[in-house]
Length: 117
Image (cartoon, rainbow, N blue to C red; front, side, top):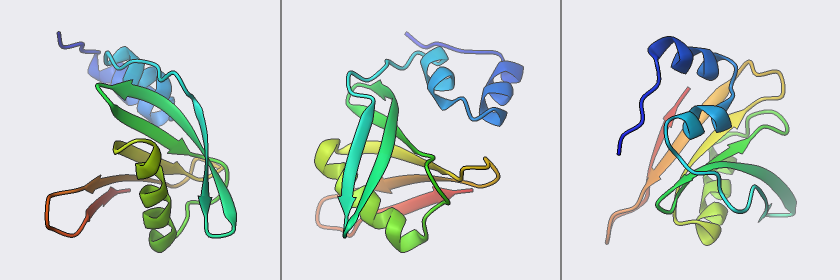
């Protein structure tokens, strides 16, 4: 069953960065575990898990500035240990910048990172 929401509502939730409500209104489930702390080098990186659909998880990093690309890739690789398929949304603390990151894994090929700002 496909769930739809009005375009205006979609834009409103996206502008407010209310990703949990956005995905839930689109028919995604709330994950059982909502907070995840990853070790990246010597740092602990907190992520908030906001939605899940058939094993695919949406995670949000909104605790500081948006990390650089190399750090985002390290975070993504650590997240893979907890959930293989996922989308990570990085948002700075002022909600001025965001990066949506999706890693594509194919057998016998390097990981392909797709990022949108």
